[in-house]
Amino acid sequence: MSDLYERGRVLALLHEHTLTEPLRRHAYAVEAAMRAAALRTGGDPAYWGAVGLLHDFDYERFPEPPDHPLQGAAILRGLGYPEPFVRAILSHASYTGVPREDDCARWLFAVDELCGFCMACAMVQPDRKIAAVQVASVLKKLKKKDFAAKVNRAEIAEGAADLGLEPAEVTTLVLGALAGVAADLGL
Image (cartoon, rainbow, N blue to C red; front, side, top):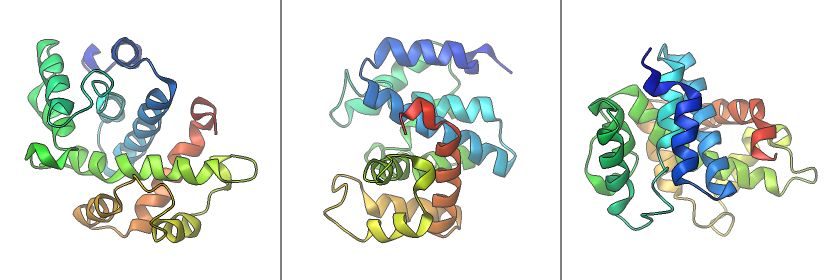
């Protein structure tokens, strides 16, 4: 395994570019979901986790499309990250036009918005614990347009469909992954 995907190195890069805790927590959540997806599909958890950690690392400096994620892609290329890694990150933003060509890219797209949504679901639990969130509750809240209104529900559905899975299956994976890193997420 290349040291490019070593978690300490990737965390240092994330922290260099991402200063706010909410965006860092989102990165930790997506990393956990991507590692779980890698284990499910036979992918490399370190590589997929690094994709998850770095998918939004440029967002604070370049929040407007298409700067995000194009500016981040340029930074990653300059650091020697391979093109499939960079393309997976680019493809999580549909407006880039970069197709999701492999399982890593498809899973990133499928879990990105869903991680944030599941975290929002945990925040309204009486104990604010991700472990208390049920799949059925997430699916029900997805139908409420006023709950976590900024979450792109169409992308959640599209991501699951691209994987050939039901939203409940992806949600189950995400909730399990997030429960495993609940302390890092403050949930």
